[in-house]
Image 1 (tube, rainbow, N blue to C red):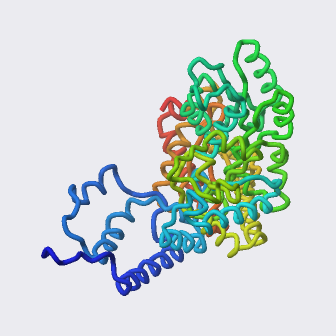
Image 2: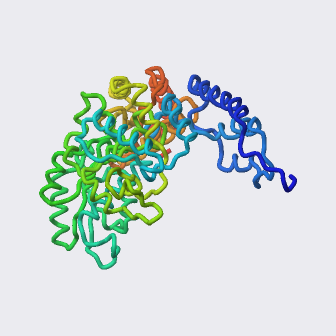
Image 3: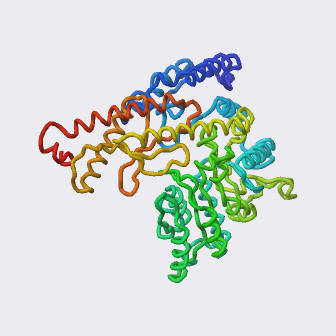
Length: 505
């Protein structure tokens, strides 16, 4: 390149249009025929790294070659969360409307840190979150979009710490009171991580026992608070869960709210999964008591068909949240904010840079409408209950937790096992179900995950993908029955010793 020759600034509009059409065609084909891919990636550690050059290219490469490598090397290493037979964890899915919203957001590439840096980004976020709030029945309050519920819960706990006083923002935790946070034994790990990040430490988290349905025990909570005050701790926050990760149980938020009101504690509700069920009016009960919570998080990217990431965080005390995080250097000051005419979202969390996530959420809500979203959630819950009924009716399977929504916790438990010590039988069932999980997932036709409930290995089937039908659920059930029978027969073997005590084999 000569001294006077200027490099091309970017891909030309003509080439972008040509390559863009190809990408959109690929996406449309992918969404139309996801079953052509195995749900769980069939690869080994390091395969992709070895397939790609160790050094970056010195010269630019044609987009056609890049897209060819995307198909050849990247796709084989993808676990397809958008596959209708993805039943692991929480079965998220990105709708076409949400994907288009993500595309437009990337094209605009705005940073919504201040109202002034893109007024529409801030105001659309306010509109979309207020629509969502109305759809799930929460009272009017401040809302902000965060990337994940983990970060939203961290910000909620930081606000609770700020509300407790003690000048922690200025002086730090050293020398201050021993603050204690309460949550259930079934709470998401992000709550404990938030406590670690905020300087509370793991000792600053007290986990409250749960009842037979895996719900926090309010009486045990009240007793723990009393004990801690006597021991010199300063209780400041309770985190309740609406839809726990393992079982989707719903903590008794109204009773927990009573305890928090009596004790003067901040109540945060992690409704990342089940909060979205409230879009369907008959499941509005899931958020009962949340009108009294100080903060709530629900996840459109879990069960509202919005591409990850997009979490909706609501707080009844916007001033406290702002006090916990606002730090405005001169170069970020604006006349609009100084006059309190607008809110700058950078003041309400840890991030300065903020993606235009509201666009995809707004487009999803508009495309489906409240009734359309509710209908799809109802169908997922129907499919979850249908699968639970198959488990209940089968003599060699059992459910290990209630199924309030669309997640089923269960295990294979063959009835032809000889009588023996219960702990040895459970050890056999644990090993059998681990092998069953691996066998079903290895087929590529379904993908399930697991948890442990009261020490027992439990399989989890989570329905939540936009494109999942009864046929996909039936396929998963057929695979489970087929492989459970095969593995149990193989596990018993042919030897008399194994026939008498198969857990010893």
